[in-house]
Length: 361
Image (cartoon, rainbow, N blue to C red; front, side, top):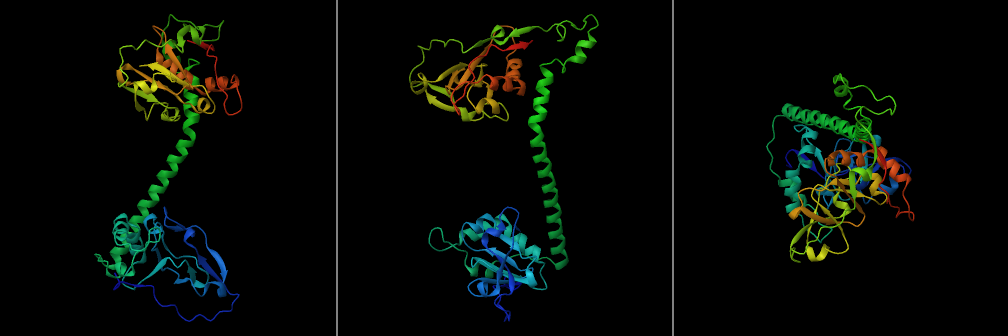
């Protein structure tokens, strides 16, 4: 690599007053994810001209120490006062020659392949390992013509820009995800999602007296579900039998599913935990888990049953009642808001104990 760029080039003579303002880049000023400078400090020339790394505008700064090198603390120096600056002694400075596009070398140094190879040759005490300068000097690379180097760098930046746009759109979608889901669930339990179907049934007329869709009726939740039903006797289960176990953390508040169930021996969980069966709904009763939406349908349980946190209510739909309908009701923001209003207990340990809420069904 040394034939294409100078590594740690000599510092020229700099005749400036002690109070002369100059740019300074600590290691922390480099964002390892984006490979960009996040801030530039101003320092008096006398305070940085000795004992720090000198570089010029458009030089490449490459972190040589662990874990900064592996993390990607590599950047092109831009926006420096008077076109030069000083920085951490843990930077190597690479200055491209006139046959090399600086961005081409920059993206090479930031590549995962290069960093893995650099990590393999690090030396020094644990926590203070560094990439030897010789690795950079002797590193072999295939160098395309200068114009092609520029085209490659341009293409990389174009693709990265598209990725940034995609990431921003995804982040915006995540922000609106909860609002959209809440709106869908709210419409579902007001009958709006099936409104067109009802209107197509010509023999059905709107129920003007109750202000709910025809065929619906007001009930309380305990009319259609069992709340914390009695546990099935399990005398036939041996202590060594593996069982599904669901701690509170295993339920995703975003997807409303059991994402990381555990497996424990029956002897460990048979006492002191909440019992539930296949297709039961587990509903977090404690704050902030309830408000966050930790509600899930129990499925794929070992031997059809499982155990979990004592902070779950177990909801079992009665015969002819669709358990998924109840599940989505419990996940709705309207239900969670009303449940929050009825929570009791000490701050930080408030729980929702009553599940006799009136519903439309």
